[in-house]
Image (cartoon, rainbow, N blue to C red; front, side):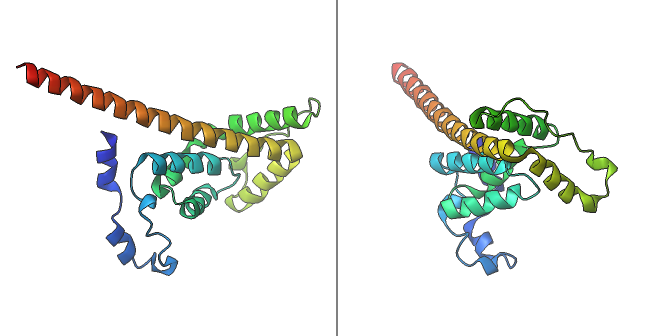
Amino acid sequence: MPRKLFRKYLPSNESIRDNRWLRFLGTALHHHNLWHLNRKSVAGGVAVGMFAGMIPGPVQMVSAAIIAVILRVNLPVAAITTFYTNPFTIVPLYFSAYKLGQMVIGTGPTRPPRQIDLWALPVSDWIPAVIGWVSSMGKPFIVGASLLAILLAVAGYVLVIVTWRIHVWWSWRKRQRNRLADVKR
């Protein structure tokens, strides 16, 4: 099961408690749900990661970590899940958010803002360029991104819960068949 594989790489509570770089956070990172792989904690981590992934800019992982600590869901899962937004998926997601916002607000079809070429700019100008690009999309983008973030979070949560339950049911049935086969021998 992947759970055993992931458990091997997750830090223990002792290693987090003893880490000198994390001491300033006090007991905030000591809650068991932040590091354990159980159904609700992982589903919550996926939901937080899907929600935080729609935040524009380079603060997605930090936002996911902060929200995961506040809601006490799996922190590594929340941070890793934000990677669904990447250079290949961000434009279609933001365009979908923009169109969803237009549909909800009821504004007519308008031309989306021009694309930005970050590679042509110095790195120091990337954040202002992205902020300018996002703000040029205005209210439809903000409304659409918020709605899409909530929809993705709910879909991620439900998908994990259902998949986890199917896996548990399947494993239980498999053990039951094995027991019956052993009894018949």
